[in-house]
Length: 418
Picture 1 (cartoon, rainbow, N blue to C red):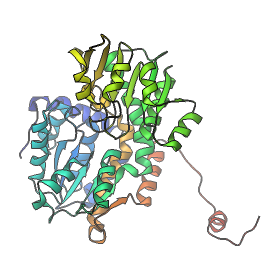
Picture 2 (picture 1 turned 180 degrees about the horizontal axis):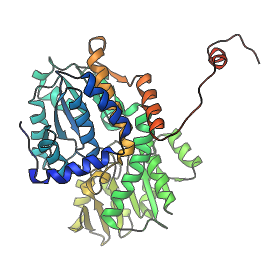
Picture 3 (picture 1 turned 45 degrees about the horizontal axis):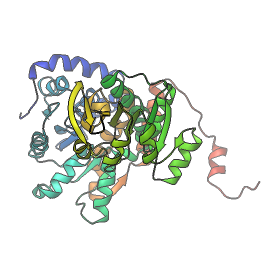
């Protein structure tokens, strides 16, 4: 088996952490037990470009239990947990290509190593595998039946490809499942982003002006956590509906040009480029902290920051101090990459339980229905979404009502009046 990890000797530690995370992933465990019996992915080679964490490891183990031949590479150079990568190779026999801190060349070498396995299916966190296949590895297209995508950023890229007629195989947008974005994006990103910022800075949130760029599900979650820790939350938005929602949720709304002057901590969660531009850094307070929790490190104009800085040094792990020409200091966290994975451990396993249940069941769905699907981006089937929610509630010991026959008839008819 081919692989590339930092230190295979870390495997024992990684195995313990994988098992510990697995205890918080009961829905995925139920799926894995069924997969072991039924082998719905037998004969499928699956190239997965995901954050290599304890939670992802449990997904990879589930896919293998279902019969898949899995090749796993990192979807971000800073998100890999090296002990987990080692354990996947040594303890679980899963070809893994991921090293925390890998450079750009190594990152793409690892993607190509997973693709060299000749995938029938792709599984992405950011659509990088799809992009490489469509631009550099078109020879693989004839074998691929479909794929899945887990992030908002990736779904945006894939829908753009579909509109342009460039997408050459069907993709299921796992990110758009209610059991993914309403929980993973909101509660997972909210908590883990705050965790990453605190680990990188050890700053007290209470009393700070916390500027959040973007009020999608991730922004909502972070605003909730920052406010709960005593910060004064300011939201910047370009979407009037989201800005209105943030206003009614009790947050202050203003353009980034105004927020830059008053913010103590900034975090981007938009999926777009140059959300904090060069001119904004010059307007920031001395000691301003800047982080990103969007998928790619393009939301902060780092190149622009460097042009107005007279010096720069690393002052803590994942924390770089830029001294600007005006004498003020700006602290950039995690190289502008996903701070919740660069400086912390990413989402807690209990929330990734639902996201990865979606991934596993959508892989099974794609295997069964690929011949019926067009070269489009598809929503997660509602029955999969509902089933995962029901399983999660059951695992939490939560019971809900069911409709009576009379109620079902009422909701499905038009005859009843007021």
